[in-house]
Length: 341
Image 1: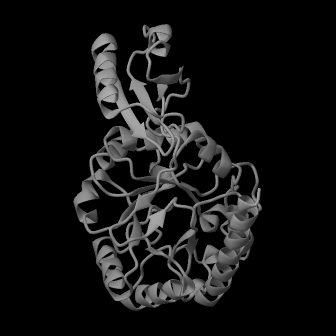
Image 2: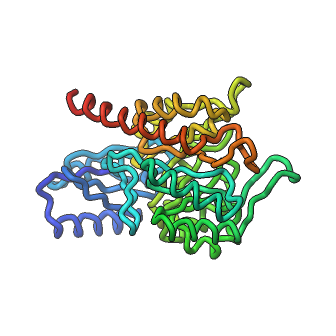
Image 3: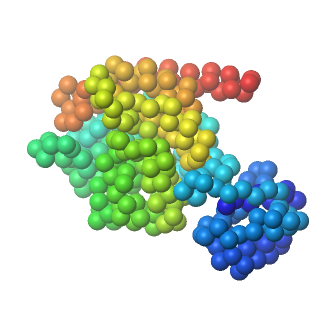
């Protein structure tokens, strides 16, 4: 249940009203103070709550019951967009286009440092790179693991770019202490024990959509993290598995506006994993911007033909320069169109 309070509600009135709700109905009351109004979200058994009593209160503007199973991620509870801000100043969800770029796998110090310098010069705000790699085959390259994390930190020191990398197990959380954004991959989207543990830390979590998961299931996974106390969640659409074989996955760009309507969390798009083909990354990146994505995650490798993983979907640094230039230009035009109605 959500309760919207009148704009002139005082802090003292708010405190008294929350206390009366918690005592009278034995519910937890979360508060979101927006630009234009204050919203209360009631979590618990709300079936016995008297809506007429609530509506009769002087400070109440409106009251609604919520049918969706997610509460903390629900835009009805939190009307304003959530903006994820890092200590280094980068923001995700503030209206700008944020690009995370780098190789699928960290392979060497020379490789990651070179790619980091190139993507930064093209306008990327974050360096992405895999240290732990979930692979379909047990015989494929599994990543450099802790050594890869150290190489990412070295590239961050050299370039100043915050790093984004994937975690595979809750047992590795201590190893990710120095990572700026922890990524939960598609295969772990419903690893609920991992999500619960990530809810206990104060660090942004990038949550990729599962291979065959609905939007509601995706948001519910974000709810697991937020229920633990960590509201710094970024959602990433990376394509879903369908019957189509022309691309690696089917990029569901309609998910971007749908999620933004239902949920207040920022949404980015990964066109590299979605298509599996480097020649499609540019068009799908542009389409993602037009769909309203808050950012992009793009794979960039200095030598895709000899990459240890996912070379076919990786851009060269020169091609990334071109793609970044085009998406930033489109973002500027998009914002102008939207501001003019």
